[in-house]
Length: 81
Image (tube, rainbow, N blue to C red; front, side, top):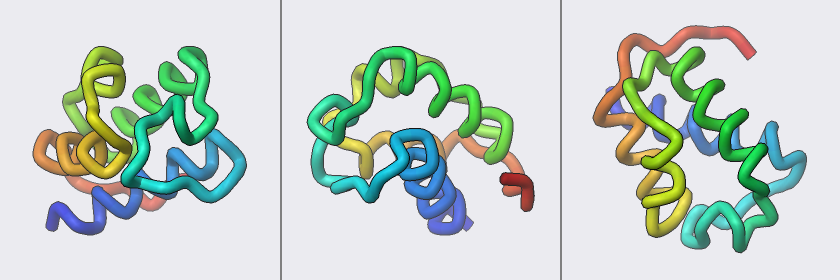
């Protein structure tokens, strides 16, 4: 069940940043700003039911590890977005 959430998180990151991202890089190396991170975290919380915090995004080594973390702390995936 974690993989759909992981993929959904990557889709949210792409949607907010408005370009394809390299999940092996961190948010800032992919062109994110602090405000974009706030938006990403709020969308992941809302759309994936993930119990995550902004600090989780800042602490993530890369986007893939953030997506893994969100997947581990997610509720049911919704079809919004």
